[in-house]
Image (cartoon, rainbow, N blue to C red):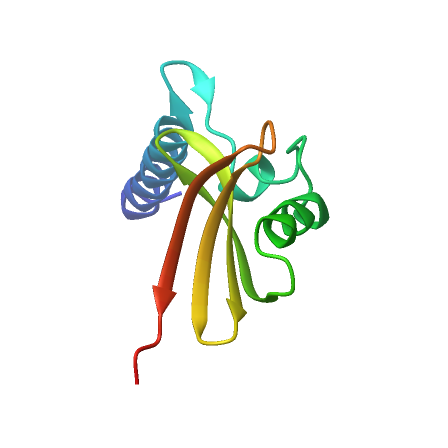
Length: 110
């Protein structure tokens, strides 16, 4: 094997080790693996269906227009938008215990 091939092989191995070390450094935080965001939303004690029911009980007769899963102030929440007549409602339901933690109304004034 020529010296040129040895240097090229060593460079490739060195680059691969750097990529591997960088990947490991990015995947850990203080020695703990960082879990993907998608995995955090799966294990909620309050399901999307339960959060929808909680929101509809707060605004009877309203139609749900959007449901999203998010984190607010370090806690998992279901963000639910509803509409009834000329009023749009936004309700945040704590995904751990089902409590309504935020409630807003927006009246259409045409």
